[in-house]
Length: 314
Image (cartoon, rainbow, N blue to C red; front, side, top):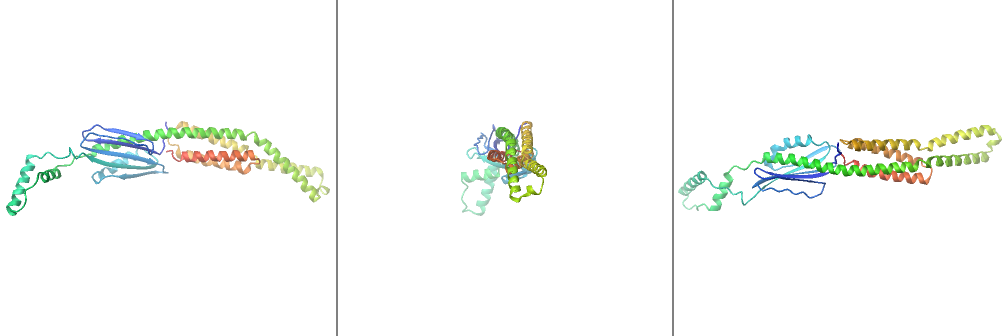
């Protein structure tokens, strides 16, 4: 199952008696749509990041009755993202002029005669005025079915665009997962040496404190040595980051598994990113060498990059 991004763009055009065209692209990419009919409808869908599904509609007044059907179409397909649907109509001015019908002209002639019989000075109608009257009295072409058809194809195009964006995001995330595994592998051999170095430093300071306080004169050497070893062991446990590295690897494996499985993974990945950042921060706070500190910083940079990408997944 693919992973979908929340960013995408698609458009579709349809007319009552026309060929149709649909285009889909990533956010900000141009889309082309054309039609050969006298009257056509253009549907555009734009999708950006959002924690939940947030729908917006920009419809002409003649299509307001379609909003419930369009809302059902979008909610049945998408789960997250801020989606805006725009619908516009186009009517060709050259072919949209009506062909006057005999009954229209007869009625207009009778009306003109009635007016002139009461108002002898009234001017006769011009050809342009006659055509305008015929155009206004003719029933407008209904485009509801064409609008719904274009909207369905536009939704399919947006799904394709979001799938392509999602595939690119998965590639980036898997690359960051690989990099974090490499950093964890670099940190692992540094941990024992860092612990031993800090343990020896603690014992040196312990001995210095004993000399400064003359404690060796009142407490047996065996007791002091045992106390020093216990304190050094407790200190070593506090600065040991092996557990953090193990949990970090476990979270990375789960991230990779979700990305390969696909589906609606955005919210679960967002939680795992928080856990990864917590482990990286703990590693940095416990770091007892400059090498481990640098690794922690690089980890946090990579995790922040992952966070930015994950927030765009559905």
